Image 1 (cartoon, one colour):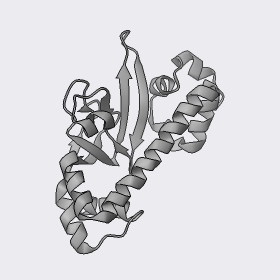
Image 2 (cartoon, rainbow, N blue to C red):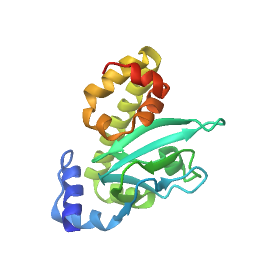
Image 3 (cartoon, rainbow, N blue to C red):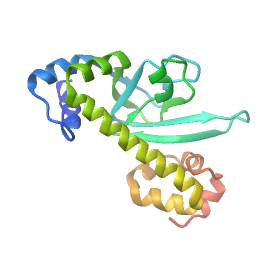
Image 4 (cartoon, rainbow, N blue to C red):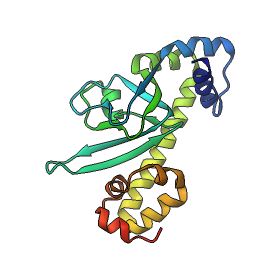
Length: 190
């Protein structure tokens, strides 16, 4: 288990420097969890108690429309953070689903713990600010790609940017992420 916490510390220290004393304050705020394939981290209408840092595994966040169609917002794998951030930040019921595509292991951080860590350790406030900026950039790029690229161009970009992800995700989920049918996806050269 100590090795898992060491991975988390290394993740933080890719961006900020922490003393041992700071780390000893931070570590107990994180709860280690494991879930099996198809188990939910978050379900629509339920409280969103945590944000999650993925140690290993693969997660998807998505919404379901009135017709029952899945609209995938994000795939998250090792070293990614995931949650229903709107519900998490405002402490309201979830507006999306987040579940495991693979058996997954992660650390959970409550909003209260995150706020406490950021107040006590300015470097961590900086870490979360930078990570949030990366998230906004990723979201902006995703929206722009949906507005300006064809589905095939988005697929090619996904293959280029995250080739290992595409190998791990079932084709029907890639199609849902791109907003096309499974049949359309099969026609792409990629």
